[in-house]
Length: 214
Image 1 (cartoon, rainbow, N blue to C red):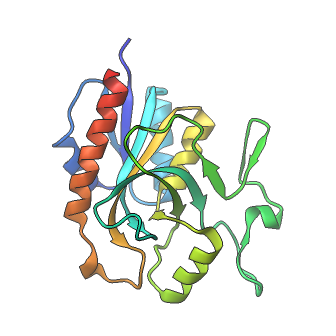
Image 2 (cartoon, helix red, strand yellow; image 1 turned 90 degrees about the vertical axis):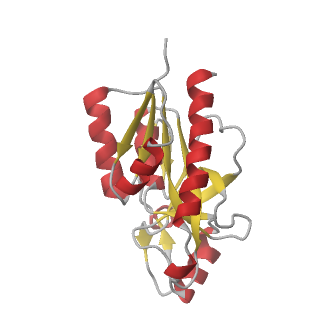
C-alpha cells in the first residue's frame, strides 16, 4: 500500500518553488495562506474533502532567535508555542495556564500554549522550539521580553495551528523550517529568502523520500 504524504506551505511563492524541485508519487502539495487562521482552515478543508493522509509535513521559511540556527539552516520544529495567547498585565505576560484557561483537550490531557509533537522525529535535522505569532517581532523591547519568557528558537506565523490540527486529527506530522532572517530589530535587507528556499527544498525532498520510500 502506497504512502500518502501532504506538504503544507503558507505562501504561493513557497509552493511554486518546492513543486518545481520535488516531484514524486504519493505526494500532494497544499498552500493554506499565511497565519494561524488560514493554516487551520486550509488544512481542515483539505482533510474534510480528501480524508487523512499517512503523514503531513509543514514546510516554510522562518526567523531564528538563536545564533545556533543561522540564515540558511534547516530545522525540524518539535515543540510549538502560541506566543500571544494569554493576557498582558502590569506584572508581565500571563499564559493560558496561569489564567486558568484551556486551549483544547487531547484525550485526557489539557493543552495550553505549548504543543509537542509525539511522533517520531525525522532523521538528519536538528530539533528546535518554535514560537507562533500573528505579528513577527521587530522591536528590541518586545524581542527581549519574549525571549526571556518563552526561550524560543524559531519564529513563524503558522506552526502552532498546524500542530493543533494534526494533533486533533491524530495524523503523524512534522514541521520543517529554513531560516531566512534573524529575529532582530526589523531589517529586511538582512534577509536571504532565496538561500532559505534552496536549503528548505533539499531538506523537504530528503524527508519526503524517507517517508514515501522507506
